Length: 274
Image (cartoon, rainbow, N blue to C red; front, side, top):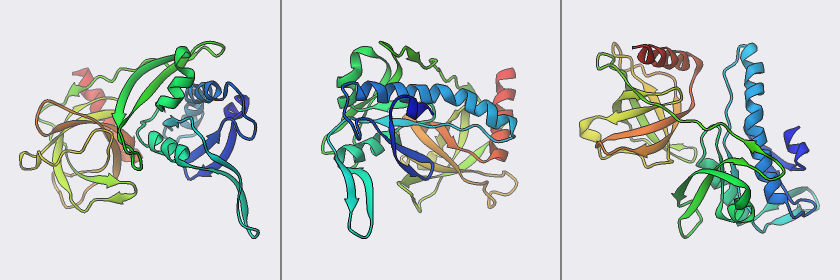
């Protein structure tokens, strides 16, 4: 409904993702503005969506949105046997790459989209990235809202991390992800700080050189202190940043099984009470 309201065209449903076009099939002067406004409106709508699904007993949903503006090839693509209305081109590929750098609740845009819409946007942050297929690093921008005719703004969120009691020894294994491939190299560390949506992790002293880069994805497994050979179900997270402390880095949890989510929530609540 939100996409339709902003005159977007749903081109593809890809697993848990959606590719939406603005300016297709008809080009308009405000395509980039409507794309950003639609993205912010979609994030705002997640509040009511999550209220409904929580009433049904399901965990909350989050999404990250990436936006790029550029020239593409659009139309019926294929052969006489099978034709599909679609869009291809490097601008589409970059859109996917930008989305891959987001975490739940974020809207990230490319420099070209910022150039089209910047005077009306609230920019909450920026990051320099080097996506695959792009020769030079680019800066992507986190959108906090859009004014002008839309006046849609996301609430500013500040993650607060709390020290975990030294008596709580929550250890984990982690491995790097490259696309859908999980590295065979597995490293070990422990949780030292926790927030409502993330954590600060510290690698073991012998593995402090094996620290993932910011914006990379990792797979984690909590370890049972009584049976380290039985790791938990898989947890997925995005690395936010390294710290000045060697071997430590912050993560944003992106996919957590319900049982582990409940355990981490209980730990977080006990930490902030104390």
